[in-house]
Image 1 (cartoon, rainbow, N blue to C red):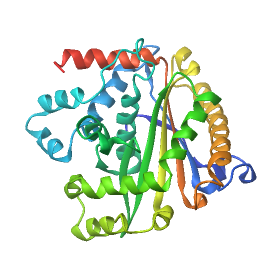
Image 2 (cartoon, rainbow, N blue to C red; image 1 turned 135 degrees about the vertical axis):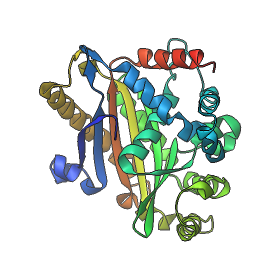
Image 3 (cartoon, helix red, strand yellow; image 1 turned 90 degrees about the horizontal axis):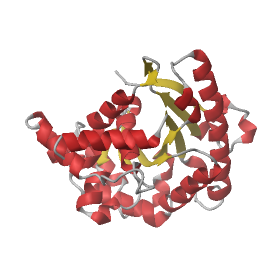
Length: 305
C-alpha cells in the first residue's frame, strides 16, 4: 500500500481553464503529503521510505536480486553509492534523495518498472549517468510508455527554482540526449531482469533502437518531474487537516501553473513534437531540507555505510 496521501492527481485540463495552459490534457499535477504524529511531521516515516527504495536506483538489477539473501549488506552497498555530503557544506546535498523518492513514487503510484538504476551508473560508469535522473517503462496492455524523469531537492519552489528545472528539461529533451538515453537503456543489462515476457522486451528494444527516429518516441514519452522541497506550510503544520490539505492544493496548483508557463515559453517552439510529450509535475513537501538530509546521513553512518 502506498505510503503517502495523494492531495492532487489530475490533468491541468481539469484543474484550471484549459485555455491558460497549452496541451493541458498532457500536463498533470501529482502532489503528495506525509502525515503527522504527536503534532510533528513524520520524519522517520519519510526516511524509511528512502531506505525502502534506495536499491532501485543505487544497485544494479543483478545486485537487487541478491537483496533477499543479504539485505543488510546490500543496502549498505547501496548507501555507499550515494554522495554522502553535509547539507550545510554542499548546497546540492540531497539531490540523490529526490532521485530515490522518484524511483519509489514511480513504482508505488505509477506501476513503473525501473530499467536504468541511475545512481548505480552515476557512481560506477559515469557516461551512463548523464541525462535523465530516472528511467522507467510503464506497460499499457500490449504497448509501453517510456518515462524519463527529473528529480530535485530545493529549499523552495519559487520562480528562480522553476527556471532551473526548465533549463534541465531543455537539455534532456534534445535529440542527442534522447538518443543517448535510448543507447543506455539498450546497452545495460537491467532490462533483461524485468518481470515481463520476452516479446515485450523485444518490442522495447526495437522501439528504442538507435537507428529509429526520435520522432517515433515522442508519442510514448512521459517526463515525471519530482520536486522534493522545503515548505513553509508544512513546517508550521501539526496535523494532516482539511485546512492544511486545502492550502497545499491551492499553493501547488498555483506553482504548477507558474512552472508550466515557463516550460511552454521555453520548449513549445524549440522541442520538436512538444505537444505529444506528457509531463507529470510531482510535488513532495517537507518541513526542513537539512533535517531530511542529516537524518539520512545519520542512518547511513549507523548502518556502517
